[in-house]
Image 1: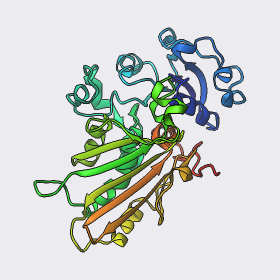
Image 2: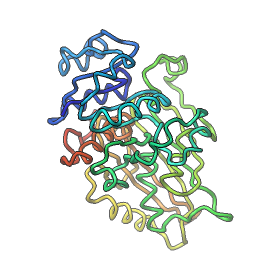
Image 3: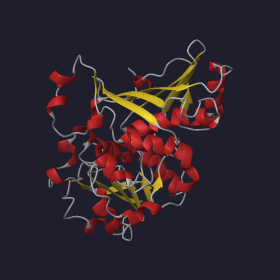
Image 4: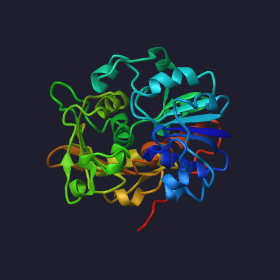
Length: 345
C-alpha cells in the first residue's frame, strides 16, 4: 500500500515514519514538511536514516497533487490545518487518517468553544470515525476517514469507560461530583517546535500544571465517557509518556477493588494492546509500545474509586493508534507492524 505522511517532520509524523518502516504492508512514498522542503528525512531525523535513505521532504502546500491515488494518507499537522485539506483529499485517496483534533468532536458547536476557531467542513463530521479501536472497532472497519483520538482522552477513556459501563462509578449529578482526571505528559506531547517553556533548563527538575479548567481534551473525554469531567494536565520532565490518575465516586459502598479490576479484565482480556496490571502502571513500561497499562483501586474509607492508565503519547497516544486503525480499516491483523512490548531500560 502506498502511503503519504503530511506533516512528517513533527514528533507524531516522525513516529509514523518509524512505525511504517516496520510495517510489511505500508510503503511511505511521500512525506511533506513545510519547513524542511528539500531536506532528506535521514538528515533531519538521523534515527530514520537507515529506514529512509532516499526519502526527501516535500512542501505540504505544493504536493497535494502528489497524494492523488495513494492508498493511505496520514495527516500529522497542527490543529486547524486538516479542516482545509480533508475536503480536497476525501475523493482523491483511499483512506484519510487525521491525527489532529479537527474532526474528533461530533458536535460542530464544541470546536469554537474549546479551540477558539471557526468550525470548517462541518459536513464531513458525520463521515469521520473516532479512531479508538477498543470502543469503536466495528465502525473503523471499512472506514475511509478516521479521526485519531488525543493522547490524554485515549488513556482516560480506556481506563474509565469499562468502570462506568459496569456501574461501578456513580454517574455525576446534583449530589455526585464530576469525574476528576489528573494526568502528566512528557514534553513530546507539545510537539517538536521550539518553545521557551519546553527547553531543558525549564523542564528539568520541574513539574507543573497547565491548561487549568479549559484544556481542549476535556470535551473529547466528556464525549467519549458521557459524563462531565474536571481535567488537569501536567508537564513532566520526561520525553515520552502519559500517566492518568482519575477519580470517581464508587457507585455503592459494596464496590471493591476486586470488582473494579475484574471489570477491566472482563473488558480487556482479549484486547491486544491493553494490559490490566496489579501494581500502579508506569510510563516507562509502555515506552515505545502501542500498549496501555491500566489498574484501579477502591478506597472504602472515602468511597472513591481511583483509576490509572499509562501509555506512550507518541505511539498509542498518536501514531501507533493511527496505524492500528489502518490495520482494522483495511482488514489486516490488528497488531501488524505494532510493538506490544515497551523499551527497557
